[in-house]
Length: 189
Image 1 (cartoon, helix red, strand yellow):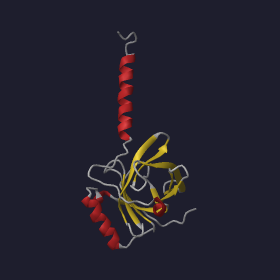
Image 2 (cartoon, helix red, strand yellow):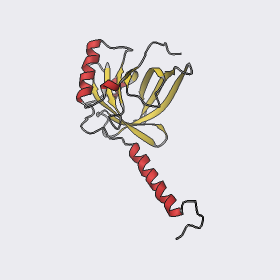
Image 3 (cartoon, rainbow, N blue to C red):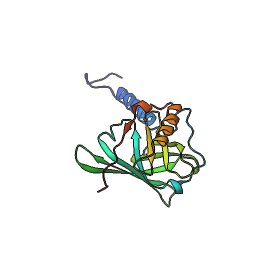
Image 4 (tube, rainbow, N blue to C red):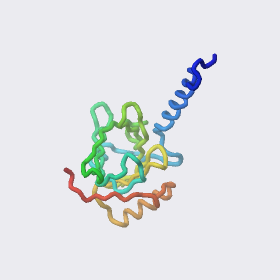
């Protein structure tokens, strides 16, 4: 079948291109943990619920320019988890918030979830290290080692705990030298 309109791609080429774009989009929405990382088990969502402060993260466009970032997790009656991410946009001098939904990938006692803030597209959320005694801190990774956060119940952790978390993260192959330390100075408005 020849292309009757020179300069415009044929229907076959457009379909092929659309298929490639769809395959790329699906691969970008991976929910599995990065290779060599095991989500925390046993995990207790009831203890994890509530507010967590983002102490450090790798750079991502969706959080760029945000300080005072927090995430609040709430179990829902249908078994999902409501996720409310909030941060202060230092360029616009205003609070920004995104509400998402998380689902357990396997069993609810395994800290491996998929989270969506944009309709049917999910990304992995895996807690790979956790203060199992008090649930005071967590190391969280996304679908790849390019997504990594240090979370805490408080706006700061003792230096000895931070050092322990950095050693642990480095042992998992995470780029601790590229972490952005998040300012946590504002009172939420």
